[in-house]
Image (cartoon, rainbow, N blue to C red; front, side, top):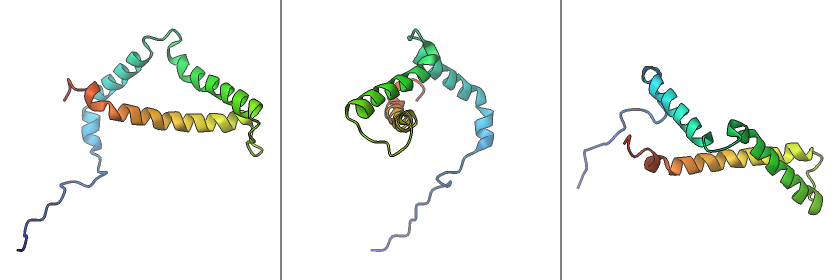
Length: 110
């Protein structure tokens, strides 16, 4: 038995149509604005929480891992060492969480 049908994608995987993105820029800006407002609307500190939370986590890591446990950072300043790790991890975690809930969050759009 021989198969003759070959299925190929119409577009390349990372081909982006910038003209279409520019055409729908108002929709894009509305989604960004909606996400920012809903994320910080219920907090007292607002967007400053975005900077305070990693700073407080860094201080806690410095106390626990640097002070109590005495773990070395191989000559790097402790705040820089812990803050770099925290920012990378929180970015990864946030992207993974938001990606996993995209369809349930935007079910009205789909």
